[in-house]
Image (cartoon, rainbow, N blue to C red; front, side, top):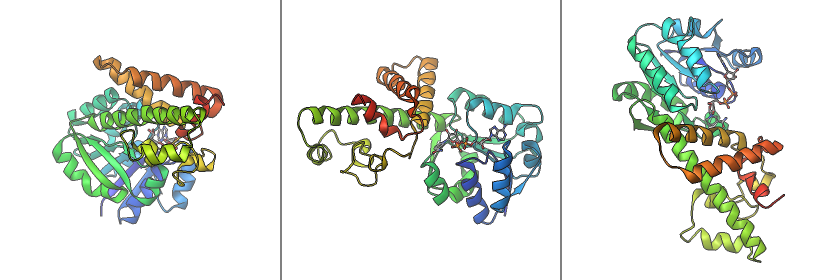
Length: 295
Ligand code: NAD
C-alpha cells in the first residue's frame, strides 16, 4: 500500500482518486473548493489543509487541475509540491496543459531529485469513474515503469509516448484530428441533407468507404445511425465544445511555438470559438453540426 496525494478533486479528479483508494492505497486529497473537499471526505478520502501538506506525506502525487497556470502554481509556487515532497517522490500530472508548461515543471521537479511524468487522459468522466481511462504518458522510462501500477488503478490503456511533454503532445494532436474530423463529418451530413441524400444511407455508405472515421462511426453527429452518440440526446455532453476548444487552442499554441503548419487545426479552433461564443460551450462538441447547418 502506498500513500498517494491527489490534488484537484473535480469532475475527473475525484473519481480517479476513488479508484486509487479502491485499489487499496491510502489517498490524501486536496482541492481549493470547499464543496470538492466535502465530496472527497464523503467518498472516504483523507484530506489535507493544503497541497504541500498532502505531498509531504506521500510516496506518489497525482494532480488533475484545470490548466497550465494552475499546474505551475501548485508544483512550483511557494510551499508547492516540488518544495514540500520528500526527495524522489513520483509526480504525475494528468491535467491537459500546454507542452511548454509540462516540460518546465518536469525539469524543475527532476532538478531537485523527483521523478515526474505528464500523463493526460482521454475517456472523460465516464472513463474516470469506470477506471477505464487512456493515459498518454511523457517522461523517463524508469518513472513510467514506476508509475504504471498506479495508473492501472485508474485506466485501462497506458501508453508511453516518449520524453517529457510527449503525453501532452499526443493528447493535443489526437484531439486536433478529432475536432477537424467532427467538422468534416458534420459538413458532409449537412450537405447530404440539402442534396436529398438520406442520412442513414450516407452513414451506411461512408462507414464502409474511405470517409470512415471515429467521428462518423462511433460518434455520428446526426441522430439515428449510432444510437449511443450525443446527437440522440440533444447533444448533451459527452465531451463539451468548451473542452474541445481548449484542446484546439493548446494545439495552435504548440504549433506556433514550433513553427508547424496546421491550417485546418486553426480553422477548427475558430469554428469552435464561434460555437462556444454563441453560448453553446456546454453542449457536446458534436453539436457544432447545428451551427454548420445554420441553426
Ligand atoms: P474540474 O474543473 O472539474 O476540476 C479541476 C479541479 O481543480 C477543481 O475542483 C478546482 O477547484 C481544482 N483546483 C484548481 N486550482 C487548484 C489549486 N491551486 N489547488 C488545488 N485544487 C485546485 O475539471 P475536470 O473536468 O476534472 O478536468 C481536469 C483536467 O482534466 C483538465 O485539464 C481537463 O482539460 C482534463 N480533462 C477533462 C476531461 C473531462 O471530460 N472532464 C477529459 C479529459 C481531460
